Image (tube, rainbow, N blue to C red):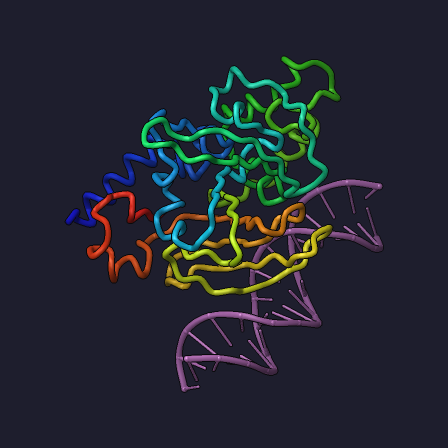
Length: 270
DNA sequence: CGAGTTTGACCAGCGC
DNA sequence: GCGCTGGTCAAACTCG
């Protein structure tokens, strides 16, 4: 039986490997900009936000993405280092218009087949974007330099112009929790991810026939939120967006974690 | 009766 | 400035 401490240490190590949830204050680019460096031997189940809890709900396909990823990021763009990025030809009409690309995650043991999401940067993400460090601001705002005239879009942000970036920079910085979203093929809207959630709102968003639900972690002092909605183009797909980082371990993991698989991957929390 | 859900109101950001 | 939209609040309601 692995101790809680060692599990946390393993998790931290893996999060570092993955570049996940680092630099919540925007010190560094990886998280906010969605540049995750997946180790070559990464299996899909080792993603911190997709522990076994979330995989037991009977859905067959899971997908991941950073909600803070560049608006038109493709899989290859997400996985390669910054200097290699090129403007994506993809276009998004509005928030949460999603494109998918396919790739194989993981080499050994039959890596999971994943669909990486690419989400248009939302208003909330603009806030997060405003949280970036000076270096990143410099990099973002200097895109015009390398890409040409004023009308050129930032290579990361797709449709966001340099002028808009300046405006965004002028906006008072507001701390925003790191966000991740992933897509699952599921009949049920709310996936069992091991945490206890309380619904605090529901909203019908524009151009969608399915309402978006808002949940908050019920644990005291834990401010993690998640949004659940169905993909307009394919209602079978559930889009789950997590915002924030849990300050505790999964609720019902505490009850039966020792009776399950000894794998350290079974006890992720974030 | 407490915990969780529903739902209309409210607010802030953004585009025009 | 105004309208639209997404996100949140909170009172009412439901359920176990």
